[in-house]
Amino acid sequence: MTHLPRQPLRAVLAAFLVAATLAGAATAQDAPAPQAQSPATTPAVPDTPVAPPATADDTAPAVDAPQPLPVVAERDPGLPHDLSPVGMFLAADWVVKAVMIGLAVASVITWTILLVKMIELWAASRRAAFATRRIHAAPSLTEALAAIARRRDPVSRMIRSASDEYRRSEPALAQAGDHGVKERVASQLDRIEVAAGRRMARGTGVLATIGSTAPFVGLFGTVWGIMNSFIGISESQTTNLAVVAPGIAEALLATAIGLVAAIPAVVIYNVFARAVTGYRMRLGHAAAGIQQMVSRDLDFRGRTPAVGG
Image (cartoon, rainbow, N blue to C red; front, side):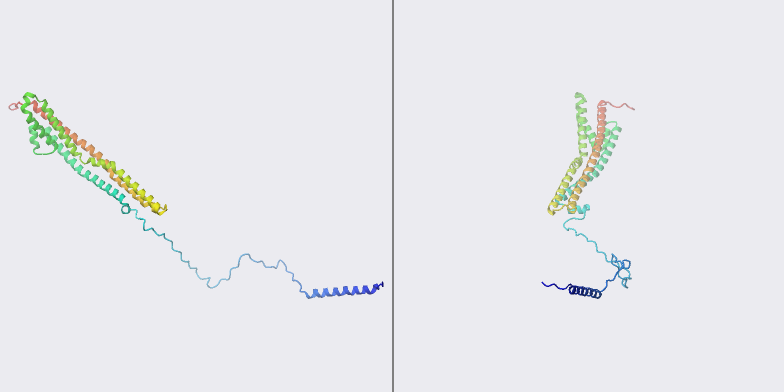
């Protein structure tokens, strides 16, 4: 094995290193040099967008945009919307209408009875007071009969009935005495008084009937109206107030009319009951005066007044 000389080998290695060094320096000169930036000169990027510059259109006055019109809910034409008394009556069911009409007629009857009975009681009380004064002023039954003439009021009938009974019983007075005459006269006067009181109380029974039944008739209309409300709810499948309100309003109107008919009827009935009682008391005073007059005539029968007395 032959050995290569060391000096030529070293010379080759040195030449190779020099060539590599020169190639690296040429490459570094050809590449562009990076520019150094200072942090102080770097412009800051804003976070919000910058508004564009104003133009001629932007300087014009702003015009208000048209506002949208409010939306109006459409009404159901099948539902009544007039809740006045007349509107509720016209929109009510036929049963509720019949109840309202009946109660209105009852109210008219009540006020008619009030007007008629007031006039009748006033006239009857005046006639009774006039006849009672005649009775107390007359000294005998014969003169009281002449004073009433042909009047047909209850007190005048009492005087006429007592005079007739006295005349029919006069032939038997000597044998039977006067006790039977007084009883028969009292019986006749009681019958006339009772008949006059019943005639004067005629019509007050209607007031009692209206006062006791009108609230219940109005309650029937109330129940029927509420039933119609529930039927409307079941048919429309909704609990909207527009569906429920008309039926409830009709029901309340029927109740109100029932109270309007009942309350005056009860008050007027009580007033007339006291007035009829007072009238019968006047008749009782007149009957007592007639009985006293008959008793006085019986005591003085057969006697003649003294001459020049």
